[in-house]
Amino acid sequence: MPSYFLDENKTNGVHEVHAKDCRLLPDRFSRLYLGEYPNSRLALKKAALFRADVEVCRNCDDRKLDLPHSLVVRCAS
Ligand SMILES: [Zn+2]
Image (cartoon, rainbow, N blue to C red):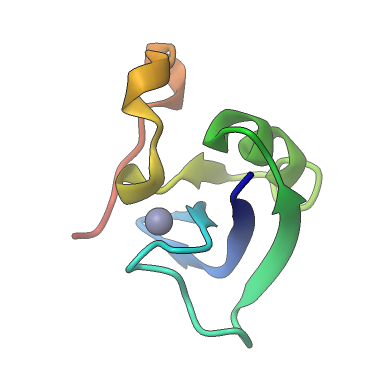
């Protein structure tokens, strides 16, 4: 399972959740380790325990899982 991280800094007003191999992953001083999850949606649930405004980075979104629209995210790039 991939590891997920929470960006401690806000992007477009939200804290983004990134998979370990995301090209947008912040440096290690600006991210919080969330753990290993089968998909970004579960990592997002964990992230919500730490921050109020969390979303999955668009680059990391699991499109194949057909996520509900409420979890579709904004991304800076
Ligand atoms: Zn990402």
